[in-house]
Image 1: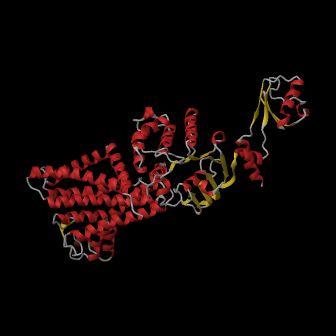
Image 2 (image 1 turned 60 degrees about the vertical axis):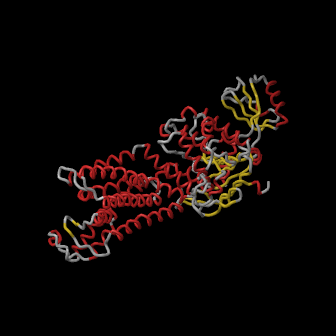
Image 3 (image 1 turned 30 degrees about the vertical axis):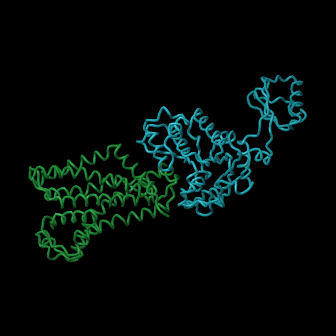
Length: 279
Length: 309
């Protein structure tokens, strides 16, 4: 059963132009631009800071903001439209459900990618022009990782939107998805303490006693994994302000792979659930 | 009629939602070229049945067929030739009707040049560039009807197409359905308003509590239920009071009185005689006509018969 790219494109185009029309894309670009410049001033202590320092500050904001944006874009895309009745008209056209779902993912995904590219890209140009120094390799990796983070949370929110019947429950699921990435770090830290970890040593910057499994957290929390990958892209290995030695199995490649899996597996589940559900 | 002329068919179609049996082993057939009314009180299972026919709901058991092909989730080909209007229609708020229809033209692979004439057909040409989000429920419904006509399908499945419309719009939709049917389209539409169905349909299915009560022409249903044409008489002498002698008149089997009118059940051959007798008794007859049995009567009788059994 081959997919019809024409249908996927039509749905994707509609999602993208919807968000262009209601000014979401323009707002996102403005937010990203302002955020980056503000972070740059913070990093440069009143002056425009260089790219690696800027990203260091920016990550703590973008790793929360981008998932929220992605969840906002995706949570109602199936359940909300099923509830309102808009989806039933689309699905009785000669299109396959998988095409509709992929079209939505790609359309909303391009909203995120386009906003990141223009918002962060233009602020990158400003930073490079002002400081006269640029690390475009790291910065491009940061932008790609931010796009990936957006796609990841979009995929997760669409996944729950496909499973759940109502708009409001999928919004709640969006909240759970978001906080999962935030609290898993605390849980792992709790386990570390419970298994004889020493907080004082930890806070004084002595990372030698940290067991390897502790670092597995970056694969469980998409937000933390993404930030870690962005830091690695700039050649920085910092944790809570301290230089750390990461196990060899944590590198840009494994982290990016984990992010891709975090995107593809929910998307596959979304297809499965969407195919089976009553609309 | 041959099976090849069956456009839509359900066989023991059943849908259960947790502990509610919404549709219960429903079997019906829609023939090519007819307007088929799908009738039942609110909550009878009409929309659920329609959604299963359209492949939006998966049946718990049983099957639905369109043009002899089984409806399942992947039936892209089947849907090419069907225009559909769901019960609760909703479009994308920030699109105009032109943009909305353009989107659906693309999905259906249809020519966009028909959009202005589609909008004109449903009387929305003046709102062509307004956002759908500002539309009233009725206008959205009309846009839904326009959407269903994209690509000039030969089958229409419309769930309560006249629900929520005011009288003027009901007429637009009714005329449109009739025209489409005259051009050869098969139309299935559901309603809980009997007069809509009676005026339009060749055949009807009546369902209640998820089960088929009857599927036939309105005349046949009337005959089967022994509903007969009646004589309607208006007289200023009646005024909510039945003349004492009326039942004595030869041929009169039953009489009901409302305001200044009487409905008299009598043998068709005796109608003139009854009228003459009434005049001889000194009753001033202002107006009279025969009234065909209404679907409403059939409906009420069928449902109450079913309840008793």
